[in-house]
Length: 531
Image: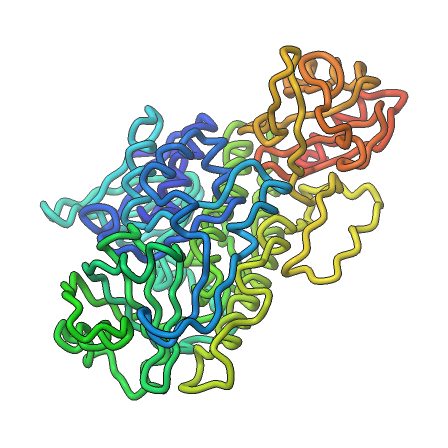
């Protein structure tokens, strides 16, 4: 069997890669060694940038239906017990009305065991995708044909050899692909140990009037966290830093887990049903390289970070959003293979930065120690709009226009929308000819998009001649709704911005030029690595 792209791993990252490649017109085969999708909640928070991706791929509504409405997750609460004294309550930026200034697509809380079936159904509906569960990757090697891999059906024991032109390793923190390639990790390994308990209990008497995504329990005897799953009878209970609190993973029998849950709730006779216990160890390290010839690491295979802030799954999904359009361009022959080097150049530095900040969050919350002076977290925690929207790529696939980056006081919390090359194309409202308001996010998709003003007719002609979608803001199909499009994107009425398929600005001309066709063609050639 031959296939353009082999995806190893059927979690959120692998499933998203399958969906993205299909939408880009590329066949793929996904293999997952487990029999089905996740059975534990694991990751839960989907940040607004990731939801923008799902929105553009047509699965946002199904994910929101599977998850919780924002009204059920508006707070973060610290308390001595769930039924006892409240210590602090916050409304994080991600849940506040201020988010609408940056994006029309809100964040979503959808537990991983609810999310994965949605992504799987959508991926399997694509005619270019094949998904095989109960299938494990064995030995593989790279040669002139591509990646030659042996797959084994764990039910029948049957083996098969496939040849893929490229392979995406989304096989988790213990990635066998990464280890087989000898790719090392940079950072700190095993920074603290934890256990997740999945349970059924009616906690609504203590949560109904203060709906929160997280309830941190802090008292002299116990530190743990209630994790909202369905906001009714299904919850997670997390205990961090087991050793520092005098526990081992083996201590968490169903009986012992029930005792701790009742103590954390402050309700000695609370009916509790323990559904599962999953110990894990948090690390904060990143792969030294994301690419090895025809193999690319993504998700936890490329970066493992503490969950404090909820960046792990989101970073992985955004990894493959960056990678898949580049693979498609190379496979279709519109880009040189050098474009694929920009995946590491753009995503690995960002992976490092996000991992470092996630660890700082964990330290501020006392994850690495038994006791601490305050029961809270640093102000940046869950207010990381700069990390979510402010990524700025520097690579051969970004053509600098010489403009300085915006002045940012705190790159973790602060975000300034800008059309400067390397940044996410910012959200602005525009109106169509009928007066209906649309976000610029809705104008972007799987291909390159050129955006220009009313004086950019020559840009539009040049774009259409190159089979690039062109949008005149203020003329043609769209007129500005808020009057700030030119200022936000940093161009005059005759200027233009070229947005890549992943929604990042690749090139900008602040004003017009004497030869738009040559300028735009040169920009596309340079981004695609064609000189």
